[in-house]
Amino acid sequence: MKNKLILLFSLALSFSIYSQENNQSFSLEEAINFALENNRSVKNAVRGIEAAEKQKWETTATGLPQINGGIDYQNWLKQQVSLLPAEITGGDPGTFVPVTFSPKQSANATATLNQLLFDGSYIVGLQSAKVYLEISEIAKTKTDLEVRQAVINAYGNVLLTEENLLIVNKNIEVLQKNLNETTKIYENGLAEEESVEQLQITLTSLENYQNNVTRLKELAYKMFNITLGIDLNENTLLTDNLETLTLQNISLELLEADENIDNSIDYQIAKNQEVSKELLLKLEKSTFLPSLSAFVNAGYSGFGEKFEFTTSNQEWYGSSLLGVSMSIPIFSSGMRSAATQRAKIDLEIAQEELTETEQQLKFQIANAKSNYRFAIEEYENKRQNLNLAERIEQKNETKFFEGIASSFDLRQAQGQLYTAQQEYLQSMFDVIAKKAELETILNTVNF
Image 1 (cartoon, rainbow, N blue to C red):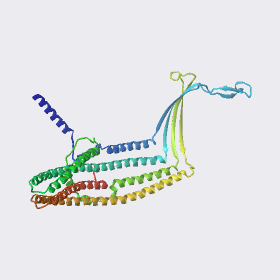
Image 2 (cartoon, rainbow, N blue to C red):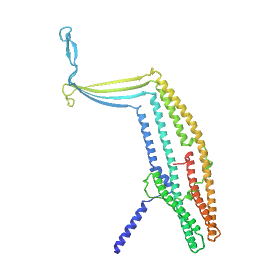
Image 3 (spheres, rainbow, N blue to C red):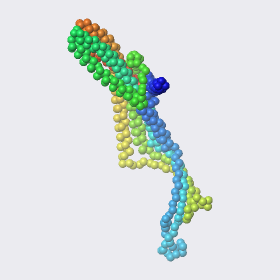
Image 4 (tube, rainbow, N blue to C red):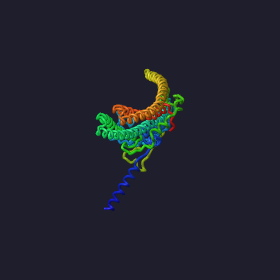
């Protein structure tokens, strides 16, 4: 029996150690770095850059030498006949003799080298491929910034629910103690029943809120896991503290940061959109230019009445050809002109959108700075309010048990304290979230 208990204890200890080893712990910085490698959106953005690099080479290769080969085999089931004047063979004038000009079977093997010499659309295509790669790289940076902000919000939300649950549990513990003491006083005839009922109402509300926060905590962890790019049911531990993170994220220097929108990702995207429309206009204009290409063709042909092309006795006849081809656009019934005008209009639209983006970004930066400054001010204000609410609640609790204050006064003070606690926690989260939002707009993060 003793050996069985030792075995069971060892298994339980091993399972506990194994569970702890499977828990992934993250500081906020570690969580951001992890997400920038494992988040699914980030992975797809990396694939987008790889695809753009392949697209760039694909476009470049169209102007490089192209070699194509071909093998043809023909077997006349019934040979085509041509008619020749019978006079050639000594026949009667005005009559014809049916003849065939080739053996029944033939085989050809050819190779052709094509080289583009000039094409305006190819030059524009090379420029477009480069711009497309830049767009993909900017999209990757935007994804990184958005994922970073999402991780910060998810991390802060988990810490918020964790702290919220700790405070609620502590409030319930204190309130339960007060209820027990008040119940005893009531049973001894020294307090009114209403006092017990008021405390019971408050306790019931807190317990219901506790259940809700517990559920929110589970959801917050799942959202955090998804943002990191791991299974939503993975066990994760957060090592940073909400208040410490808040103090670390109070940066008055950021409020004085340069409002240069050139560094903003959204501005760079709008600028690239303008460049893309310029290239499309160039592309349409290039259709008015001629294109020039050259080719070299070489091959061998074999003929026979029977299939003997794989034998050494087969005779092969070589041929080669060099050529240059020029295509000159002459008349398209206004189609090319209309396409060029349309591309010009699209460029004008992109230029207007760029100007609109500049104005919107200036407003967004100013708004983000204002929100961040307000979040810092609210944090200081809510911290002071919490200290006041704690003192008021303690005074009313003392007065209540001394018979000076009513149960209604105590409940009001408790409600005020609980509200102050929630507002203080929310103010800390807002400081962290608003700073991340401002950093995302300004693009001041170094990856």
